[in-house]
Image (cartoon, rainbow, N blue to C red; front, top):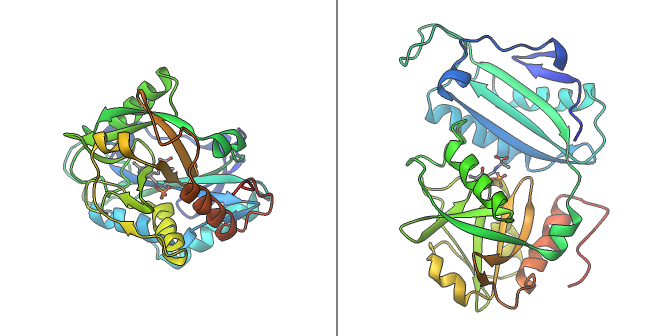
Length: 290
Ligand code: PDD
């Protein structure tokens, strides 16, 4: 996966090899910051407004004041793309920390947030989009403010690693059996033509692709029920899928030892995958077998 050489820091563009973090950086020492991952198709951001809005919501929630407005941030992200002459499918990772200061839990008095953004290539994963993925269940041991896209991802990292070690793509997280989301995506269950997903409370990240899925379902007249489902409900599901900026709309065909539906990507999942491709203006379409 290639990393592009020009990186945005604060509001300047520098070469990635010239970049060094100070040791006393609150993102490094406390995870005191927030981030975003935005998908790129052929050099164009997808759902950019939604991601920038969420970035500012997350910043406000942890009392970081981003030193410029959303319009300027959007402009800088476009400049980042231009300066790297990015034309591929990829993603931008951006992170804003409270800043650099002597280590102390209390917020430093006068500190400027550190802002970083860089581009990576990310080709679409045709195989899994076509065939679906297996998942594993894990307890959701995170905090109560999962709507903030915080840098503190240790529980997510551990859950995803466990999934990987069990030949699974994702970990489906639950609190006392109530399914919240996955380690880095939102999760949905389809039963009798209706789509169920956890309501957008503090216990999940309000995914930008989740918002798009809501839109697609409305356009297709498929009911979306924002009601949490139980891990045991999955035994009776017709279909399941997950969504995120890196995974798109992805069929889920197994949880632990339970095969979902007939073990193949479902009809509603396929409708949503097609809607996603249209919405993201993807020209090399994968989803043909509807
Ligand atoms: N993850 N839930 C969690 C916990 C996530 O980390 C993500 C995204 C999502 C989906 O959000 P969106 O649709 O806005 O991408 C849900 C990103 C991709 C990441 O951490 O790499």
